[in-house]
Image 1 (cartoon, rainbow, N blue to C red):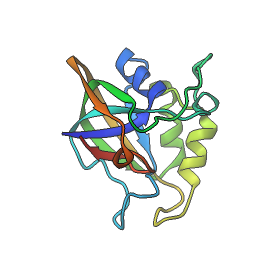
Image 2 (image 1 turned 120 degrees about the vertical axis):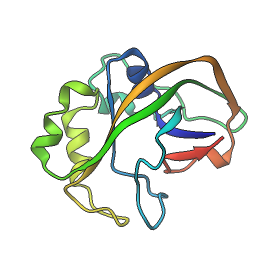
Image 3 (image 1 turned 90 degrees about the vertical axis):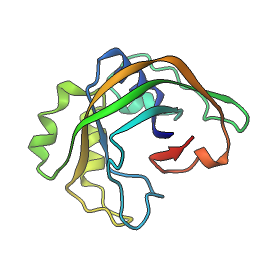
Length: 154
């Protein structure tokens, strides 16, 4: 089973319907080909990032420590990608502001970031449908789930 790593606050927004797409530049460890929405269906693997509240428009985000080895990670949603595109025009990205919870600065920084084989002036977008799982998937956090990569195999 494939899981997509995303901040827990974004997972909650996707599950609640407050977000209908995923924006991604790519992780440092995406490989030579770079990032792509390589899977049409996957579960959301909630990640913890101590400062994620600074990057979203959701008030009162409570900072949680990053996962420790041995902790239980609970995944509660399955995602189906209905369309995936790479946007290269900043105005097209801005037009999506009502469909996600990230701040404009966060998206701007990612859109214009260049490095590790990724070009400035682009960002990947997946339009998604999110379904709550009947039974959560539980895994024990280990090193294989860490690092700056988007996809992990459970």
